[in-house]
Image 1 (cartoon, protein in one colour):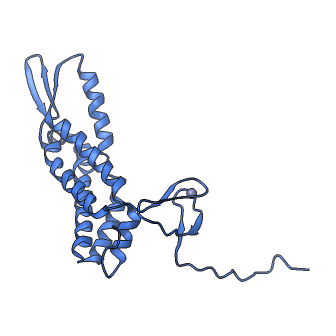
Image 2 (cartoon, rainbow, N blue to C red):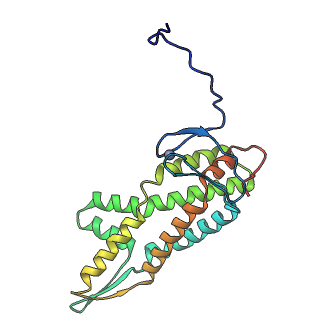
Image 3 (cartoon, rainbow, N blue to C red):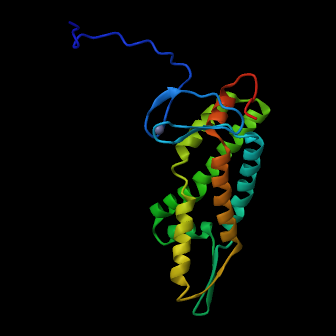
Length: 219
Ligand SMILES: [Zn+2]
């Protein structure tokens, strides 16, 4: 009779080429995908891998577009407010300064980090990672920057601030004369481009390109 309590050697599994589903931890062999194909987790349907065409060119174009939108989104007026004869123009940067000057320094710091500094750092990390792949230089730094980008992803909260701006607009509409500024259009454009970039910049293709010594084979 077999003693079930006795320790048994683990079966030898080939570790190379295994992938774990980030949602349900199912361990499986990495599929080999053709251009445009997707691989989903067989247990929870999470999209594991996608082989997207022209990842590098599209992502570079989107990063540059986002960087161009970043400055007007933060420094041009989001709202023009006319209340009892007083007219003000509010920008994202002006909001941070107002919070700081009214004694809420810690809130101003959080707003500055989450709405301005971290989104900019994320974009710069993405740009440098893509340039290191395109020019085939500094892959070690590229890997480090891509890791930093993944840590920063959870801290950039532009969507939350857009929601806050929209709530403020709805509440102020009844008590003041409001007009929307060009900064709001750029801010919405920045969020749309960033979401598009997240979808286009297939992580497994970027990791693969960064770890390859002989060049980019993603497209
Ligand atoms: Zn899964």
